[in-house]
Image (tube, rainbow, N blue to C red; front, top):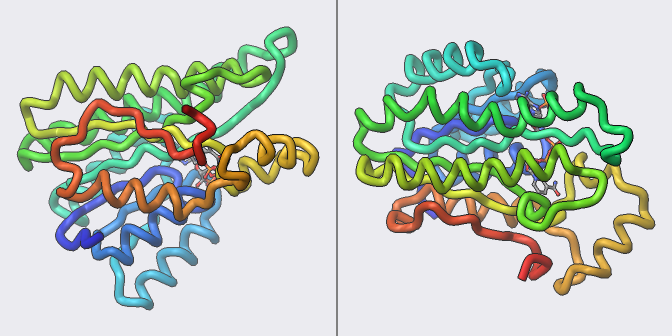
Length: 247
Ligand code: NAP
């Protein structure tokens, strides 16, 4: 996938799926501005690696759940790049608990990081995208947002909210040539899934028809496609990437 000429923002690019997205999109020729919340060392090392290989990537410390921080971030990226072609809302967290034990803080943190961030970042980029007469917004949902999961009511609600938001933005901004799609990964090998016990991982792997967890690169290939002009008539969709778990 050739992404030369594309300016892309990826939230949460310091680890896991986000890191893979940053590396893949930059290697495909895009200029990639990516954020992190606290992993400064990891983010700087990704920027350094890619720059030394002749690609364009820059790390920005920015809390995706903080509305005014997203405003500052997009202002800074526009100063650095001039225009934004693609926004990937990838930053996300889990704070799992059964409903009986779930505290208000666990609910608020997950909704603000996973869902409010998508509203905040989208709000900041749509004016520049309208000016540019094109744009692609890619939101990281989850199969859990489609099917639900015991112990993840907060996370499932945030990821289901992303799907409704995605469809609405696709309808609202389609006439401006701005596309908006959601990706619903199944279980992907990252710090998020490393937190599971081996027994839980074995049980999940057994339930996946393709008998393996996904790799961050599997998701990166799909994001590259949705960032490119090859997907120019795809909008308002939720695309699962889950080894046939969600079918
Ligand atoms: P991860 O390994 O835990 O990485 C999360 C990334 O998000 C990190 O770069 C982290 O930055 C960043 N982040 C968290 N809160 C942030 C905030 N408030 N502002 C800015 N950045 C923030 O997670 P992952 O597994 O790669 O997941 C990435 C996305 O895919 C998430 O939205 C997740 O819900 C979704 N997803 C993952 C899976 C899976 O199986 N892994 C499945 C379905 C969906 P720091 O390093 O600075 O903390």
